[in-house]
Length: 575
Image (cartoon, rainbow, N blue to C red; front, side, top):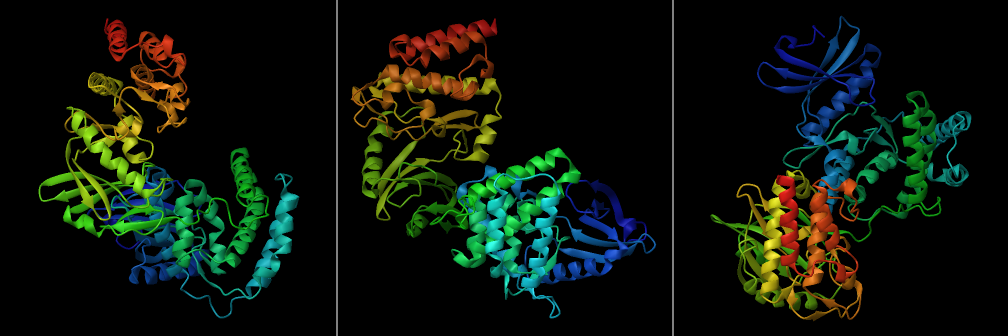
């Protein structure tokens, strides 16, 4: 390593153990505060590494988001070859994707497909062997290796039969440069949300569609990302011929993954066997070449470069009159879509009905009417812990309700990044949040209302102001209220038995159940209400458990009764 160009500027050198590559990898910090990635391989790979480096340099010069090459040469007195790249800031895509919204996952998938199309624009050498002949030979070898390894996949006959019946698809396929290991484990998402492709060490030439054989890892991490990758690559839904070949390449790769895993031990063999099980399910026993994870008719739009999902296109240009959109909430099933907007020094939260939102199954006009009806609810239930209503108006062929913005994190599972911050709060802070929620609902009952469709998506916490904020109370209504639908609006984790019973009374005792369910969401195992999952004292557990009794006559009979028991039990903890 000492004879690498500019080695004397390397202030920090750390070995990187992650990955399956035979390359030695190092994180470098120079005395000029540059951060670099150094890869070292045996000199026998000189020509391959030189070609890989030159292609990456070519891609980077064209603006393709890959690891940017810095230097290439020979080191270790001629025994090794090195490649030096700029360090990619960020985190592996497979780690970050689960914490993103479905629209964000899909949008990054589209970007990965577009990048791959650019990578595939580099043609294979003219002397490259014809693909059908080459890959059929490779397939024969994979089947032979699998049959000789001694470990078998359930229903392997279906996999082998599919391969044998579809070998003709390989004939006449054009070839190009391949990344060689294209999946979320070799992609970095920067703090700014940009996607960069790394690790070209398995690059080769071949059928561009074979490159998708690693999409199994991406689909397991995020079906929305994998769907976006295909749609981004093909600029729309892929042709059926592609799906037929995709099933072929994944099947072929799956067979060879079993003998590949054997030298790495039982754990890796189990991983590959589980993946094989997934693949058979995705392709429905090899009877359907379109994998079940592919999401048809998934549609996203952008506003200020922020992706959000809808069922169909909708013109949101009218949002400009409110200011600059910096946040979109598109995961509600109520028919509403919400925006965070900046206008000068002010920030606003805008709830809009009238667009074909992705998760709403009702009529758009019903969503508009329902949102209009909420105006009186927010006005009458105004409270220090309720999001502050400002005004409402007709807008963009729909209806908009404008609230004061709050820089708070949401507990709702539909927003994983925000929920993660919320859940990491201490239980002492969550106790304050719970007391605020309880106080608000006691006030709701005093004003003659009952809470309907309150769940974790309604709970916010502003870490800067140290304040609980409650939102999304659109279905709260005056008492008495009778269940006229059977299964009412709401999350089952927070709903009492009477909210599933046609003709049942929905009242304060129903909201006692709601407070108990909220306590278990904050301090226990949600639907698992065992003492083992409960993080506070047994006295508080008993109070919460009584509140969620299926027999409403055995619950506390008012929120004030619940509050008194809760405070009494809490005094035992403090004592």
